Length: 353
Image 1 (cartoon, rainbow, N blue to C red):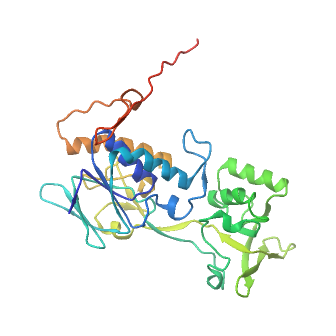
Image 2: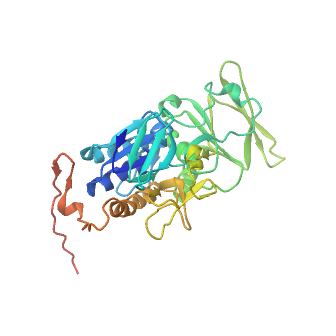
Image 3: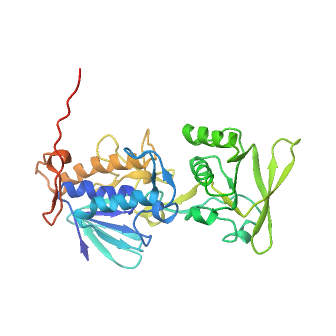
């Protein structure tokens, strides 16, 4: 049995940052994730995707964000159970919890934190009759390695952030990028919409709006797609291409977590965001994309904030009656469990009035 202070279910960015916040409080953390490597979707689905809303990083690749987080938590020496899914949650007589994986590995701790992102997931596929015939033969539902598309013709479908971001990113890699969206307006961030529009004016991206891909053609590999336009006067466009990437998001599933007696709303776990991000089960918290509350924003930086707040209350549960005085890392540095310490530089900031 693995014993720790905090069991973290989910080793994505939010779960990893929780290790850091817990470590500052001298709390040991152990992470469980069904994926074979830490990083969640950032590692498994889009390691080369640029992320633009991480503070102090105008742009950072998802894979590099994970590497930085792993380096940040290294002094706290977290434990990992990877390639195993958290299957059952049982509360013991003393109020602590036992989490068992699908492979029988048992984990014991007074606090459980669910940071499982969207949970288990599968891509939403467009209703194209023969699309399965071309999966891994030109059709992909996520971009893992952009180099696959170097000097290739690529058609992307979708109107959200993922479709826009990859169209922008691949504009400098692929020989041709066509972005197809069934509506006139995109749902993504305004900055991404403006960038895509600018690249379209430069001829680096072709935009087909109020249209959708309806048919695929090819023998051993995808060779072309048919784009049907909503305007009857435009009819259909036959587009030769090497790759088709429909990006319509992921269909999330909570999996076994949904059977743990937690209060669920629209496939997300309800939490008390006014205080500590605790669920309806005392001692079980949920942070990141897996939780829901009024005003919830599904952003990585929101998960980071929730992790910091949650850890303060987890400390109180683990150490009842013991007062913790928060010290800023800029003053005290970061000290690992082995006594090693990264000293922070003390700087005086002068304001000019």
